[in-house]
Structure formats: C-alpha cells, structure tokens
Length: 242
Ligand code: FE
Image 1 (spheres, rainbow, N blue to C red):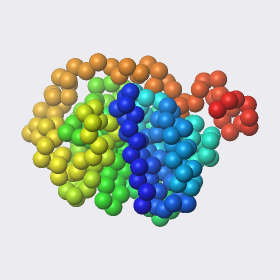
Image 2 (cartoon, rainbow, N blue to C red):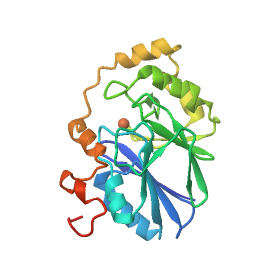
Image 3 (cartoon, rainbow, N blue to C red):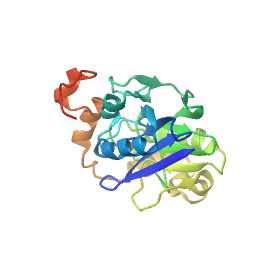
Image 4 (cartoon, rainbow, N blue to C red):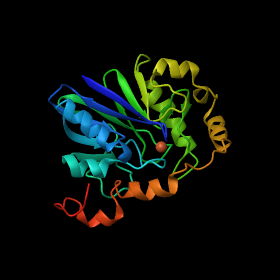
C-alpha cells in the first residue's frame, strides 16, 4: 500500500494520499489548494491515477483542492451528505464504503466539529479529520459546530474502533503526526471529562480566536475551492489559466 501524509505548516493541516499499488488508482483526503503541485508531482512519480478526492468536512481554515483536482485529473469529488457545498460530485452516506483499487475505507459520519464531519476507517487506521486530534478534539464553536454531537461521535463511534487502530488527524499544532485509539483513550484529556455535559461545558469555555482564513476559506470551499471567475467554467476547455 502507498500511504503518504503531507503537512502544510501555515494552517498545520494534514492531507493524505492513499493507493493500493504503484501504477494504480489513488485517493486524496483533505487536499489543500496551496499544495496542488505537490500532489500532482507525487501522483506522477508514483504513476498513480487520482480517481477520488474527499474532504472530511467543510474546512474553515484553508481552501480545498477538490475543485482544482477535479479539473486537472477528472477525479470524483466527495464530501459527507450534510455538506453545504453544492458542487461536490458525490455525497457520502454514513457507513458508505469508498473503494480505491479494492482498498476500502468506511465513511463514518461524526458530526460535532461541523455537521458534515466524516472519518474514514480502513483495516488498521482511521483518518479522523478534525473530529479527533492528537490529545485533543476539533473545536465546535463556529459554523454548525455542536459539542454534544461531537461527544456522541467520539464515544459512540470512534472510540469503539479497535485499540490498535492508528489515528491520522486533520491537524496537529505541536509537530505530532500519528496516534492510536489506545493512546487517545489513555492520554487525550478531552476524552476523559466524565460526562457529556462536562464536555459541552469544556468546549464552550475554550474561548478560541476565529480561524484566520475563515472569512476567505468558507466561501471558497462552498465553491469547492474554485476561483469565483471560473464558477461557470467547470469542465470547460481552455478558458482559464491553471
Ligand atoms: Fe476543520
């Protein structure tokens, strides 16, 4: 299997390239528009054909590459069914399986950070987006965030995964790259607050500043990261520069 984790240092975001074999099909998870060239370079070097690209949720801190990748590679763009983005090709349902060359990822609806948050579960790892971070959880204080729903997603779904499952998050702000369900159960302070009510209270008291790029990123991501002037040119031939 090919599994690459990319880090974007401005917003401390991770994206992931997954494929079963060199020369086969590939999936990108949470690709950033600013890293398009990196993805296209890696796909070419590994002789991979990008067939699918998915965002774990509508991002507020960076602009997605989904629209750009669709234009450049013809891939199918996907987001969770509740997404407010109307340009996405396929809306994933809870428990829907994403198949890439026989490599299967199960889509798990985990609302809380946003209403459209999904995690993607493979045989021995899970991509947790901003639902579960390393020793933390995604904030729930903007857009359609809901701390109670996030508690339910964590304790009712994610933490039921086998303890040895590796955890690859959507962000890390302290240089960490990987965790596991066992490690998070033991060391994540947000998972050990005692009750749903206590978790809601904890999340309400975080008092975080809004994401710096939020006013730009959310409207852009509602357009799948495509520049406004090209909205009418999706799929059009040669009308705009890359
Ligand atoms: Fe997020």
